[in-house]
Image 1 (tube, rainbow, N blue to C red):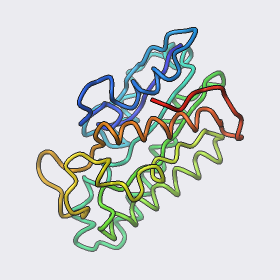
Image 2: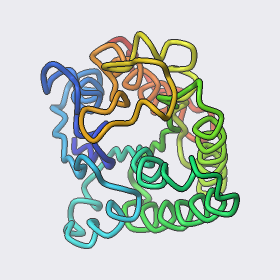
Image 3: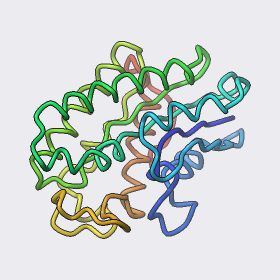
Length: 222
């Protein structure tokens, strides 16, 4: 079975103590039964939704045709790139950011989705829960993700709910939970091993339920 994981540094496995603890690898192990699950990773630290969408032009069609599971989790870097403008109170910038993200998300889904695969799209968690502008951005982005999931009939992994209230336990290097914690390097935004486990469980739950609430015999423990 081929599993294609699309995203940025979170999907790449950043801040997991071992590659095996990154959420795509946890998902693959949970799904491995009679057949081995092979992970194709199309993710890179620093990628925005636009960069991910552009990168898919280099993926051969046979990958999408053979994939039985595709997961998509991207958008955190869109916020980080725009944080200077958001902090300076540019009212129109947030709306512009969300609109561009929506367009990029549709490009990704259109490219990667196939009738024979299960597509799971994940909401974003907010690494800065004590920053109003970050909370507003994340809420709007997640509204877009839920809209796309509903209209495209994708399975929705509620990662935001899985992480909500436990950011200090799930995020590597968590400090004050405000956008002012952003640094040039080692930003406190990536999930630690426990965070990757929480994301994997949310993805597996979505995979099991499917877009119409269908059940699958998949164990969520990772």
